[in-house]
Length: 198
Length: 87
Image 1 (cartoon, rainbow over the protein chains, first blue to last red):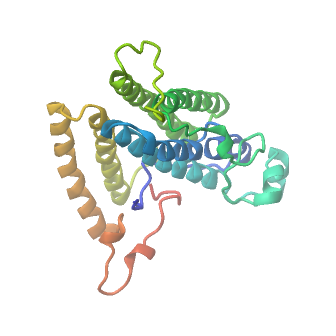
Image 2 (image 1 turned 180 degrees about the vertical axis):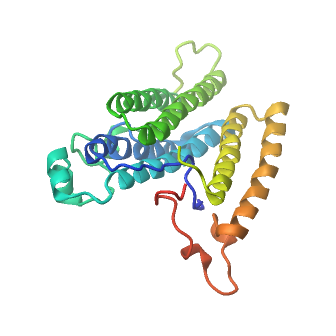
């Protein structure tokens, strides 16, 4: 089970609304490598993990991703306060606004709504952990791209924090992958050991 | 960064300690017998618990278990963290 803590993992206090920036940052909420997909990926994969350490890594990183989803939601909320219709039209935010007003909705910047089709839960720890390593790198690239697009230090600061977390999670998943690989048959050099029909 | 008021300063301290715990926690998941990691977690947990208690007393609950049950349900009278200045 989960318990909500009424605090952000890292502070988000944005002075200047910027709907054009919200339109790209929303991808880290509902896009292909966003925080919602990350949380759902790890929290659903964990049942197939073959040892307690890997069960813990998936549970705890999955949980941290939920707090990152909250930080992205907060960034979007603060970037879209007190907008005039002129700002909405001129920024290109109108295509989001027409369906969601300024509500926070999980969608990719390209306009594709959040979908579980962007991740897997294969029931096989080796396959899942290899996906998880790639997922952390892809999310890191998206944060790099957001940093290329965003000038406002109030936005860059929490985005830099989130980017750094992708790097730490990659490290922890690497250890989890090594642990599972060490549990495989010693003659299995190629890291396949179907977990279903053993 | 604008000057932080006392409440915000205390929240920053909690976020710092909380972050130390998250980092140590994930590390210990894959290194469960590391004596330095265990010691680091225990030290920061103590500091974190004290700060959480201080914050709840002064500014309102962070967890639902800290909510006031005598006069009013303070969980709903203190602001949520997505408001500017509340994190």
